[in-house]
Image (cartoon, rainbow, N blue to C red; front, side):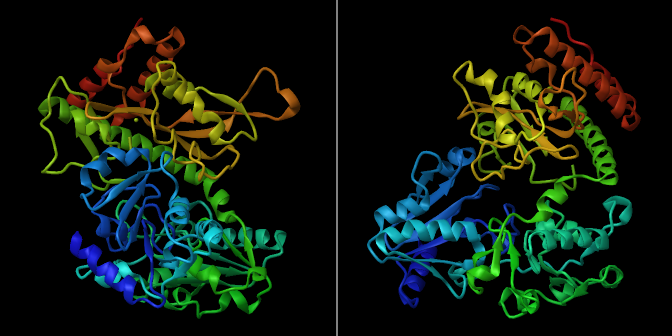
Length: 539
């Protein structure tokens, strides 16, 4: 670790201009939360392996600090060497405030402009201006220069998603997007978020572990559509799909990555960029009057599931529930392939690490008296139910509902540091303040983690739908949730003394539906286990 920091500081000294500090974010060129092994620069330089969140490292000539959120405090304390200081988000000053208060006047702070968003760069520049400090976009990534065994880029082929699963053609999606361009008087849009590119072009890939995305960019104008990707990933199927939908395959990502392509500027006047997902490098090559900084319209379009997507989602969760039950049957007897993220499997003290992954050096033996945390895409119960049964007026955002899942814990002076639902329902300020709408999906995942002792997490995926209410105050219309995750709750951990009759009824109803939906996937022994696990409880 010392060698890495020394090598990086040497590059900082020789840089023009010399750098007083370098920021190493967690994000890649697309501002992704989850990145490929090749893009894990913050992990490489710091040794901290936290799997998600807006973590970043700051290296000065005499100091090295890592900022992370509450989910990872315990893990960071264990993983960081004595050369690093942990900065706790929400408790310590944000990185830009710390820099403005602790580094000298006119200090130069280097960062790879491809790895920070427009929003982030502008916020930092405002903070740095107080002492005439400068944000310096580096022409190359300094961390990459010292990363001698950096993993190679994936060249796995792009897969075209069948209309059977997508529900809408690329041409239909492009037409909707162009209508948005016209509404906002924009001539083109640059799409950089990997999930948005994949959704727009009905493609999938394997460039990022556990995420079916492809490293690619897109530009859509009123007359044309362009797709930028490494040529080695292009298949005949992809070329055919793009051609059939009047989209042009550019062959490689290099031109847009170097700012030399110019497709977005051909019709020019106004180019739409999402300031949260588009990198500062692209924005900095344009004049501010050329750019419309606004949330990508694809974010909302993608969140509203069409009937085909909704049906596929529900079927997938039934199959997922069956797999969970089969795992639990196996677990009961003794003490999985293609995951949505690395398996979070821990027992006792390790279960207090929110995203703990099994490690030969730290894993503990399983003990019947310990709480075993298994969160594999997967799910404290009263708060979980309170959110599930909520009804709320249209126009409500997820931030307003987060409190429902926390109240039972707050009554005892407890809380959790993660969001109740990373997808739309979130207490974190950086969560988009989007009103919840019918056909959106959210997650309901309260938990409680006690450092060094145990961790509990309950998680269901919910679909938002129209609610039939007795009254309709203000003619707003009301919404409610429908759960689509099906896996039994651990009866041994349910304290009936804490549940109301209504909550007991909810658990019994949920378990009855679990048994009904999962039965077709069970063999005889699994079915016997499922029936026992879903027996009605009485208080």
